[in-house]
Length: 329
Image (cartoon, rainbow, N blue to C red; front, side):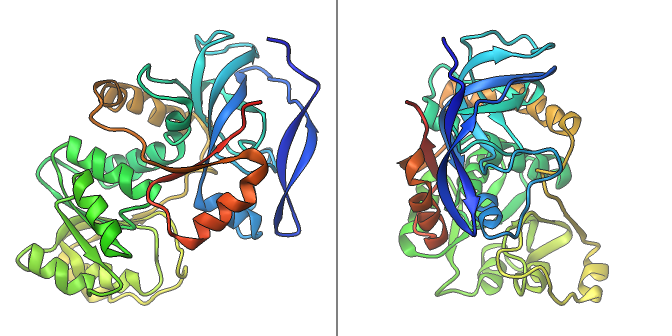
């Protein structure tokens, strides 16, 4: 496959997304160049566009944290990949483009039964969920998990994975239709946070015992309410702060229940940390893709040139599952 000198890419210009022509990047040692067939759209992309989440040093300024496509060039030490292989990858930036560099250690083969569109919806959400729910929070078989935003890309991933590993899953979502979708996907209970108080609902569902783990992307006033929802020895994992990064904390609640409160961001972690997550996914989750037990939930797709429309949909919160850009030419 002949690689052109330039490519279409989407860059941030004064808070807006604009199509531009950029040089096609060249892979260095340990890197792979992927012809992007599809790229996932995520909340951090929106935050980057707004100037709230700048790329880490050395990362591309082009938005986009997950891609799927065809390997077209290799640097030294390509980690057993070959030109022509189909792969999806977690990247620190550069996904909104026709070609993107990826660390070879963060590339994974696309399961044979998944399309490029589906594969593009895997890396950011599945790396995040595995790292936070199964590694940091140590969710165990038979335990209960509350995830806020159950119909989001993260939420639909959590529901499927947690159920695959025999946990009980409770979600919050913003409409009856979203709640119903989550139930059909496998959630054991769904709470409409616009019409129900999730603290009192969790108390009812768990007979006042609370849940073992909470995965939260909201922050703000959800934080003290989350502490009320946790069981003794419960674990709260904070992975985003869509409402606010500041909140009140009742230390007595934390102390009396012996709670563990933790959080993380993935983009700034080094490749060795992310590579270990990739290995865990290949071992524990890839067989679930192959068997059809889990799959990325795709809500809608947009052409690369229409990335701004994809962001509008993301900010409207009207979607269920993933929003994907198609970059193939």
